[in-house]
Amino acid sequence: MNDHIDRSSALDHGKTGRPPVQQRAKATREAILEAAAIQFGRTGFAGTTVNDIHTVSNSTKGAMYFHFSKKESIAEEMLFRWSEAVLGTVGKAEATGQPADRQVLIVYRELARRVETEAITRAGLVLSTDHTLSGARATFETWTGAITPIVVDAIRSAALDCTESRSRLADSLCAGFVGAVQVAISLDEPHTISRRIDDLLFMWCGTDPGAVRKIEGATL
Image (cartoon, rainbow, N blue to C red; front, side, top):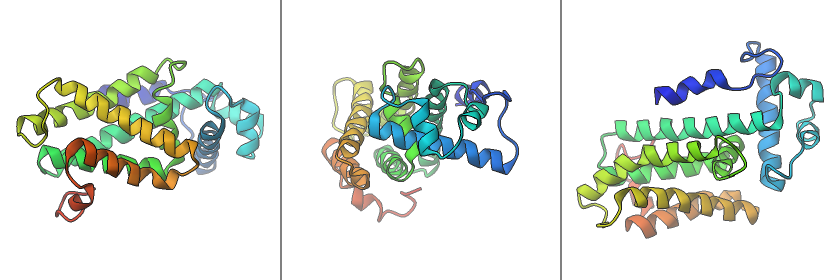
């Protein structure tokens, strides 16, 4: 996890070369990211131009280049934010001390909640499968790598019925998550993401995710 966190120092911070310090600058940078996330959701990364982003964010080109030197830099930060969400959520789930199968449900339900309500996090998830971005594959692998040990523990404890490839189940859960989110986005129904992920978890894990909410300490 520390290696990933260290990547924050390599993020593009535009002309200054360092993270903004003043609150106003932080707010401007966040507004640009939020606008770009919304636009990426509408037209995709490839279909979005710098002009689109600064128009939606109501900022000038100068302000945008002050914070990001290019469109790809915005995507890189979104990928970073998604990885941070994944690693942070997995860490909190493990800290609950719940059985591994419940931790799987906790992780995916919390990530679903964040993807449903946070445009930047949602964009980072979607971009993690964009083959045109150099950091996308590593971001997706960070996700599957973080969840695999929990899935393996759940299988070993006989909570999940899987006698084949243990790591493949974790990868498939992540792929299914992306697919459910993509469908919700394409139908302009982001509010259905949590429900779709609950359905996915029920099919994969054989446990009603709604029941997990009733277990003390089983939510973040």
